[in-house]
Image (cartoon, rainbow, N blue to C red; front, side, top):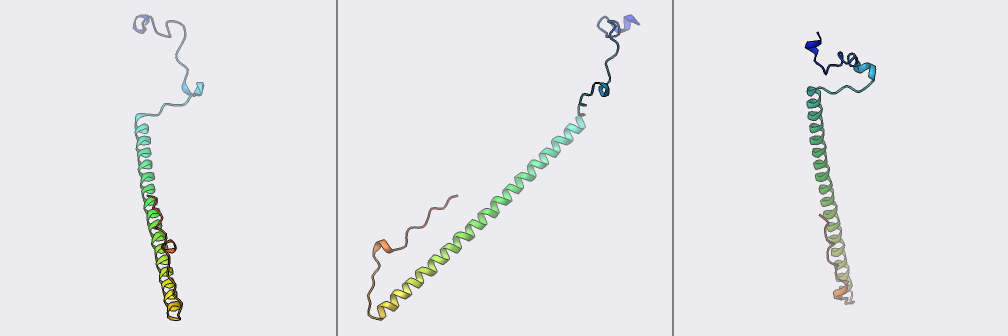
Length: 112
């Protein structure tokens, strides 16, 4: 039996067999199939999060465009009302001319 174990064996050195893992209390090493499953799960989670982020970005962009369109509509409406008031005042004998500084300011830059 000594010959079959070799000179490096724990048995021949009097150390005995290795302790069982449950006695030592260490964590078990995951098998290759569970590692692959975990990697697949992580890949699916990452893909799902990327999809959610893309959807949130699209929703945010849509809301931003709606807000900008509504703001522009209100500005146009206010400008029309102002022009109508100026026309009414002009019909009553008052002549008001807008100076170049009282024109509408340039539109705000869009942040994209």
